[in-house]
Image (cartoon, rainbow, N blue to C red; front, side, top):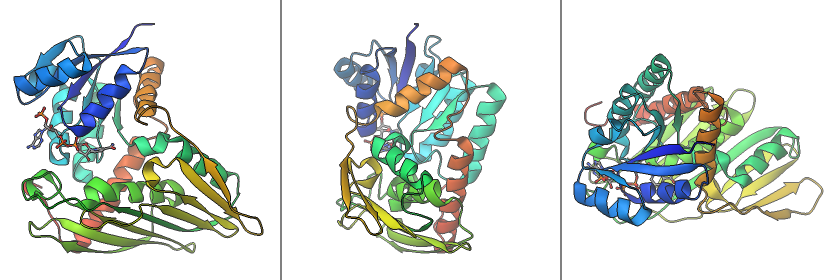
Length: 326
Ligand SMILES: NC(=O)c1ccc[n+]([C@@H]2O[C@H](COP(=O)([O-])OP(=O)(O)OC[C@H]3O[C@@H](n4cnc5c(N)ncnc54)[C@H](OP(=O)(O)O)[C@@H]3O)[C@@H](O)[C@H]2O)c1
């Protein structure tokens, strides 16, 4: 079997995790890395055994031997980076959030379809064994009809006005970086809400440091979602149904411990470890799709990615948060 040849665009924290995950796949090779500087490309390439090291993203996209590019830049750059790669004829796996807003996401989806190229948001949570198990329990009716999803993503990250999370120019703030996980979990379980009520507290640079939302479903369900980059609290998620509840222990988006409590029974605590650093599943999904000639993943469909972006837009709209250049 021919190896799938990856290019990695950017050399930050998450790019390191994916380089490790790709290197662990027997049917893949990290062929090239692109960075804003030759020095970073060389350092990253040396560390992860990547032979081709480019000082620009454009040079990476132009490498004729790269099959698929993984984009790992700050959120605000995903849009232009995706356009660069798709226009160069590359399949793309792009970090979450796919873009800063739904209009940009739609444009990238349209471009991928027009070019006949694979595109997926790197929503690794959806491949984590604990998450898959929870979906199966819900589908099997183990806790009855789902009425409530509560999910919290709360890290206390030191304030840095030039850092990715606090700089509005980099589309900083908790919602797009962290809140996308509670939102994706709620959407995965309950779908699109009928109404949203959301509020945020802004930090010194004007991005959301703390936000919460109630997603209301006319059929009698709610999702209560919180994300913050300035407070620490347990990052758990609890899904409650008419006949019990499921708890994803922290950190819920890559939980390895799940409690199933069915009405009338004792809680059952199940350990569900994941392989490696947990990022390999989505890499394998890309491989499976490419080998099958599929242009999108059934686990992370583009329609879901787009719909979640519209919900995040709605939340930001309620707070009046607009990023520069939007
Ligand atoms: N799936 C996950 O678990 C997970 C975890 C963390 C982050 N993420 C996502 O991954 C993306 C990157 O996050 P990260 O934590 O890896 O960020 P990071 O450590 O700050 O790295 C971002 C990289 O992007 C490049 N870059 C290009 N323009 C930049 C700019 N103006 N400022 C800063 N960096 C710039 C840099 O690489 P070069 O210098 O090489 O060009 C930099 O190393 C975000 O969209 C985030 O949401 C996902």
